[in-house]
Length: 359
Length: 192
Ligand code: HEM
Ligand code: HEM
Image (tube, rainbow over all chains, first blue to last red):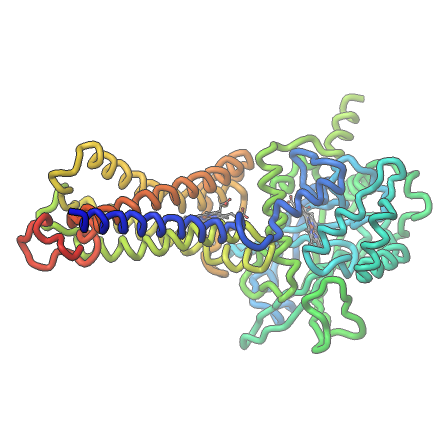
């Protein structure tokens, strides 16, 4: 009898130990215990902090946007680099979204920030490619920890509208790549229209084509239209929704076109750092033409409820070794889930349209 | 639905352990991938979707097999309330096994995502795009997963209790089985 009792208390202890072990391993896997990880929530929180609080219902970045529809006409040349069906000659419907950077959906367009284009390209066989691009060939940071640190350091002071130098100075000293990006932005043309901007993938991707050759590629959409940049000295004079209303008016008259240029990496090119441009001559393929012939407010269009996750790729295109891509995927997912649960709110362009109709 | 043999059908036992490993792996992969913005997120998510759908297919195989071949009777001396708890927990385990992959599939559909199993194979959407629905299902995917893990821990503890403390042959009925035919579980408990 005592023997049996001892045996069973040993068994109880064993069972308890197994359960504790499993719970511990689960907590470790989930990141509740153990070394600190950067989660999607950490990114959305940093973006909200930078914007002076969360704007429920909106994207945590690029909150201000306009939907569009159009088509992509592939000329077949892209098939030299990738098996993706979208590169086969043909015309494919497109939906997308123009946006300006920042978490404020009602921010003014008169800011020296990213002008952006996001696309969903689908081929009839069901392959899908989602793209989110900015008007600069490079990004200020190369990793997610620096991205979060940048959001914290560059939070605008409500009094001056500028980042607090006490936070920004030491940050820039530790991040020369951000300083370099700021110098670039200060010099570069800030496009005067969504239609005259070049939109860059920034991150590199792996393209795999015939005979299974894999190459690193960055791409850019180059506009057919041209025009002057915004006057960066007097940005504050622009109407709040200048860029969006310009695009609405322009599209009512003419469609806008871009050429998709696939840029193949040279052997020495850096593929895992979005902060480093590829310079000098490159093998470049014009894969086809994007034409945008209609725009819609986010309320009326199809783009608002889309997560333009740049890791949703067709066969023939894969992620590169750039760590920003996975970070973007998780951050976009966290942003998407948050705004989905909060419910959509009115857009700036939607407000303008309502006001116009009331007049 | 009761079964003459003291053991579960061998195919059912094989499926049980295969799925136990797969489901535990899925729970760990799930909470692990959403905890990080590292490359593990995309790598694990690409594994998570097809493995989850594989579990759905396996449960569609397992449930009919379970209904057809039945379960061995629980020991006579097991209190009624425990027998009831066993039956109820098994129903919940089946529901969770089928429900989790369904929720995953449905939530990606409602979120407007392609439901990719491999780079070139996608499942059709089973719901129209609807962000409120997506948000609800995404929350449910987390809550049901955590309840599922708790249920698995309870199930595992109960199984070990049968095997190590009661030594009543219940654990053996899902593992190696009772070697000699016609031996009742009660007599064959020594090395359980
Ligand atoms: C670590 C780096 C980055 C982070 C954390 C980040 C974060 C985000 C987030 C949270 C969103 C909102 C997603 C949603 O709710 O749907 C967003 C949108 C966007 N991002 Fe990024 N981003 C990063 C890098 C980039 C880069 C390198 C580009 C350009 C190549 C880019 C272009 C865009 C565009 C165009 C949108 C708007 C897409 C739309 O219209 O929905 N982002 N970003
Ligand atoms: C037995 C089946 C499954 C189990 C046990 C499981 C478990 C989990 C767990 C524990 C999480 C993390 C939840 C959180 O902590 O918030 C998760 C997330 C997720 N699961 Fe599953 N899952 C299963 C099936 C599926 C299937 C079949 C799909 C899709 C086809 C899927 C897609 C996802 C997605 C997309 C996420 C969230 C990613 C994000 O929000 O960034 N799951 N899953």
